[in-house]
Length: 112
Image (tube, rainbow, N blue to C red):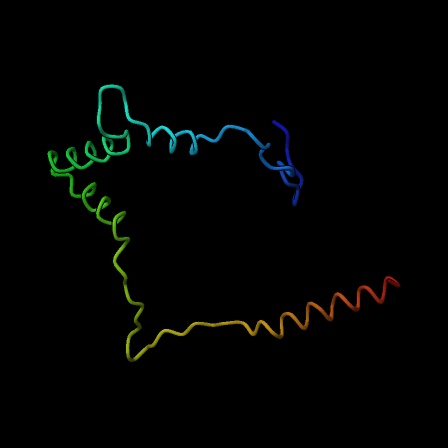
């Protein structure tokens, strides 16, 4: 197996145009209606997942289905009143000015 050097990109050109995507193939297939049926594969799959979850009383599966419909419930971020949360945010402006200044110094040093 070939080793990569630090910072090297494994596939710099990316995926070739027209190459097969398993996700796209699956999405297309889910929209098809099987022979002799009235519903799409997607409809049939959803019905199977729901019926299996209910038959088995699989609370984890039921919770997962509900979370995929409406998303996960929002959970507030709260701290202890005596020990409140603090979030350290770097001063981005200072970081940009420093980076720009450092780049200019290097450029001037190199004679560019």
